[in-house]
Image (cartoon, rainbow, N blue to C red; front, side, top):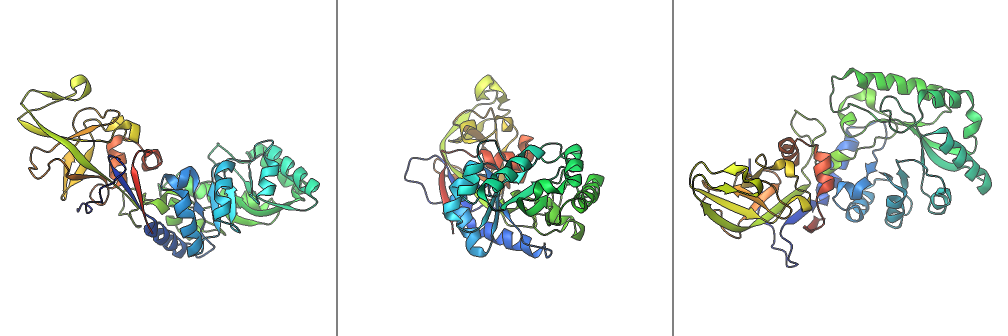
Length: 370
C-alpha cells in the first residue's frame, strides 16, 4: 500500500485538490474495448462523467476513437454536442414530451422506453419527412425504464410503429452484473434474446461495466460501461482490473493535543483513550464527504491509514495522528488514492463508490492530467 505524492498546493484558496487522470480513463476504455471483441465500446458520461468532468473527458475519449456516448439527460447531451460533432450521443432517461425538436436540431438520438415515446418519435420523423435514428430500450428485469412485457408484446405484433424510425440499437440494462453467480444475469440474456427476435432486426447493446467481465455470452454490438471507466472496480471482491482515476488530497489545517477522556467533534461521539494528536482537514459533507464516515473513515499518510475520529462536519474532518509525529500543519493526507481507493472508502461509508464519486463537491481545486 502506498500513498500518492503531494499535489501542488492550489493558489485559489481551495482546501483540497482533486486530481483526475484523464489518461487513465482513456486507458480503461481501451482495456474494455479489448475485452469486448463483438463490437465497439461506448462511454457513459452522465453526471458530468461521474464527477470527473465531461468537458475534459469526452474530447479525450473521442480522440482515442470512441464514437458512442451515453448521458442521462438531454441537457447533458446538448452540452456535449459541440465537443463531439459527429458522435452518437444518446440520453438514457427517455424522450420527454415537447423535447423532440431539440433532439432533431442537434442530432441527439433518443432512447425510446415506452410505446408513447416510440409513437411520438415516429410522428416527429414523419413530419420531418425522413427516418430519424433512435435506440429502443427493453426492460428485462430492472423494472425502471424500458418497454415492459405488455408494451413489448404489442410492439412485437405491430412493427409498423417503427417504420419511421432508424433503429440504431435495441438495448437492455443488467441488474446484477457485479455478482457473476447471480442467476438473473443469464436470465436477462435469455429474455433479451427473445425480445430482440420478436422485433425488427437491429444491432444490440447489452453489457454495462461489470457485464463486460461476465464472459462472451454478454457480448453484443455495443457495450455501455460507465463506472469502470472512472476507476471504480467492476469486479467487487476481486482485484481491480483497471486503473485508478481520481486522487483527493487535503492539507492538514491544524494539529492539536487532547488529553485522555476528552472528546472530539459534534455530540462528543469520540473520546480519547490516551493523550492524542488530532489533525483537522478542510473537507466535510458540504464537499461530498459523507457524514456516515464519522468514526469509520480513514485517510492515508506515508503508506499508513489514519482513523477518522469524531463526526464529519460541514467543512471539517478530524483524524487521529497520535502515532504519526510526521503529520504537522501543511502535511497532505490522501483521502482517495492508491493507498485508500474509492471502493474502500465506499465500504467504510456503507455506500456505493458510484454515489461517492458523483457527489464530490464543487469546492475542490480540480487538476486534470491529460
